[in-house]
Length: 395
Ligand SMILES: *[C@@H]1O[C@H](CO)[C@@H](O)[C@H](O)[C@H]1NC(C)=O
Ligand SMILES: *[C@@H]1O[C@H](CO)[C@@H](O)[C@H](O)[C@H]1NC(C)=O
Ligand SMILES: *[C@@H]1O[C@H](CO)[C@@H](O)[C@H](O)[C@H]1NC(C)=O
Ligand SMILES: *[C@@H]1O[C@H](CO)[C@@H](O)[C@H](O)[C@H]1NC(C)=O
Figure 1 (cartoon, rainbow, N blue to C red):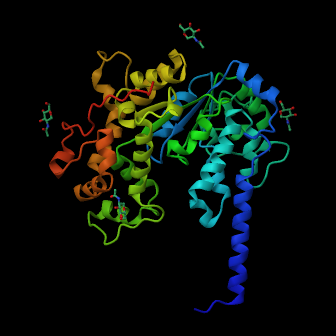
Figure 2 (figure 1 turned 90 degrees about the horizontal axis):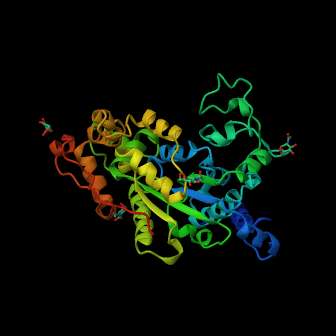
Figure 3 (figure 1 turned 45 degrees about the vertical axis):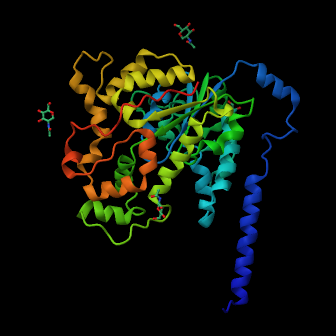
């Protein structure tokens, strides 16, 4: 094999920069879990009325935006959509898939963000902000806290709508952090960490008070949604879905579809083994249950994290799910969000469904998703593919 000196220099240089980046990422930031942290701070944090730190843990296309909004709607909650996006965004090339690196950097960032130190985000933003003023964050419009007073004063509050944060640019991260400190709950959602084991150091840290909500979904629904949204990644599946013809190879890069199921399966299995470090800190939630019983499930989520239900949250749920609090009142409209959750059944060919079932066999059995073998059963909505498994928070 012939390798030119130029390639060798390039390879060596590549290794050096990779190492440098890893060291940089793994190096403890100024405000980390290091012993140098002053004892006074530590005791202060332990005796102060504690904030609750809520983390929605899931994979892409599992319905976490909706779940995030259920927390975002509560005025006592400081919520950010996917802050870890900026870590992945700042890593380049093959670094993207070094899971441990992402997990380590993610833990550091979450630790700071849960302490309301939003400045910690800055090292992942390009171009780097000056004076803590940030022009935009990933899906910042999904965060009420960033787009309203006191963090932002929209120049035209009458015309301003949820989801629009443009008028608030640039955002003062110092002020956002100060506002965060005044909330009883700080909530983040992420699809960048899927496995709860990766968070263990945070869950064991006495300065944090984390509640994890692990959101899972029927893999056939995940797949259907990903085929539409990530049609480049899921090219072969996309061809299969649209033509009905199975392509020769289903390789998707990265990673295999079944790795999503494997990761979620692994994480749920860890939780079900009830390790001490998860006691009182873990709730398992199926997206389909949230869609079918949004009021009841939201109540359970709020109970779990220690929030009181408000009438404005009740109203938000009704407006966004077509459901009513009173099940005797118009039961037919109750089906709207549930219908959306099962709409994949009308969109996927049975062969593709069977392939997904094969790849996610263990996961489906564990979480009570029924397999289907014929096109007829697939399309018969009288047959529920979700078992009425009762999943309770680990107490
Ligand atoms: C950002 O907010 C902080 C705290 O409210 C304030 O001290 C600082 O002057 C603000 N920065 C800018 C550039 O407005
Ligand atoms: C929640 O509701 C209970 C019972 O109504 C009340 O005692 C408690 O103070 C409320 N908590 C908050 C944070 O509003
Ligand atoms: C996931 O896909 C890989 C590659 O096709 C395969 O080797 C592995 O057995 C699959 N896992 C499951 C659970 O189907
Ligand atoms: C589904 O149930 C309804 C009401 O019981 C019935 O009228 C309908 O024929 C059923 N559909 C199928 C495909 O079995």
